Figure 1 (cartoon, rainbow, N blue to C red):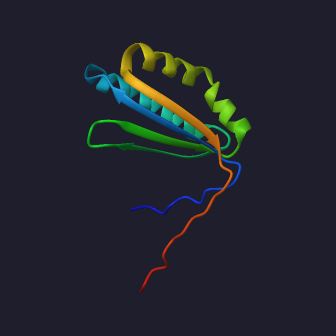
Figure 2 (figure 1 turned 45 degrees about the horizontal axis):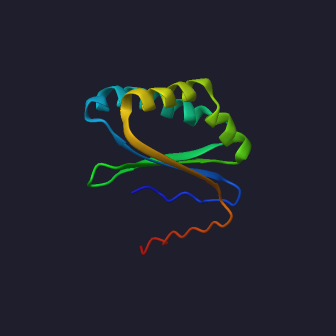
Length: 113
């Protein structure tokens, strides 16, 4: 298990929940690889992680340093293209929640050794 990131006040966090259409899995994964690499290259990118629940729902958490860098990602033409593909081809359903961090805290237990 990796080190937990240190959240900071002012970061913008997106929680993207979705369910894929069964026939879209392969195409989705190919486009996701391209778009995730693009996100990592954007100014202000902090991190992204995706979790898949037992019932198949996926939750992706994407963090950017501030509102300006988040807008850059949100409005990037290649990201917009991927969003259109998601609606037309990949998702059975999705929801997005975006918020600016107003409080942040983290804890890492020191090694016992």
